[in-house]
Amino acid sequence: MEGKTKYISLADFDERIDEITAQLVHAAENVGFFSISDHGVSADEIETMFGTSEAFFQLPDDVKQKVAWNPNNVGWEKMSQVRPSTGAADTKESYQLQFGENMKGLWMSDEHVPGFEAKCLSFMHRMQKVSEKLMICFARGLGFPDDFFIKVHDISRSNSQSVFRLLHYYATPETNDGKIYHRAGAHTDWAFLTVLFQREGQSGLEICPGREAATQFALGDGWTKVELKAGDAICNIGDLLMSWSDDRFKSTFHRVKAPCEPGDYYGERYSMGFFSQPNKDAIIQGPKKKYPMVTGEQFTANAMQKYFSALKAKTESMAGDSSKTLAAESSASVVEAAA
Ligand SMILES: O=C(O)CCC(=O)C(=O)O
Ligand SMILES: [Fe+2]
Image (tube, rainbow, N blue to C red; front, side, top):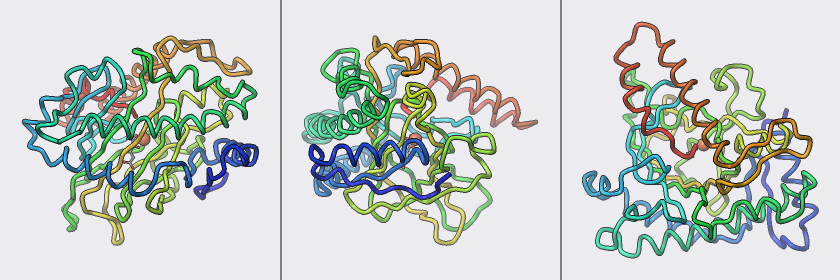
């Protein structure tokens, strides 16, 4: 098992596609995480998008509440995503955006953030192009036609499920006050593929390489810190691509560390992730048919069910602490976030 993040350049994509495919497939089969550069979205564009995200999160909560999260997996939530690994809500807020009809009435208005919808959609289309490059390589790696995954991640269709997620983690006190400020508890992403940016100087993302973590939710296993240059993206395989590849590609546990040690970053933190998810009617089955065929919609429903039963098991095992259990259960209706 390899512990280091792989740095893969997508420069001269068409000419270097065989080499890039080999690198991506190797990283997907081993670590499950890799960093990409020269992906076509410039560091300036990314920083501008972070600026727009910051403008949104700086709005008062009662304004953000106008675009509150709903079970279509869109909208704004705050301190409500409970992870089965921790049994506690992540200390963050996030705003999930999609391309299609689910966004009706859920775009923050120009009055509050000028040009918000147009700016986000334009960036989301750029992210889709990055994901499509990776999709071609993964299709080749699995022996599918080049456009196999692209066709079923069609963002122009109304049943597109792909999500762009803006994230804002709160600053935490630098003195250790005995509390644990879970930023994003250990988890795997259940979607197809994630492409994520973290702002330079705002580290915290850590991965647990390979899927066969020795402990449940990878807690207690070795974590590798992810450091990125401005403009680079960190990508990971989601549970869906893991099963679609008959488990050849690894959906890796990762977390945003609860700061607690000298050298950890305690300040507020921004990140943003693009989660590719197949259209609801996509037919999902690996080349070796390891798992029964499911549709995109069924896969999502199964992932939710797995999530809720893991969460229930966790809250039940948090022995004797009924207040924590209640807190987790009351938040459970708003945790179907993208990952
Ligand atoms: O904010 C990050 O760096 C990671 C976020 C993440 O893992 C997620 O939203 O699934
Ligand atoms: Fe994640």
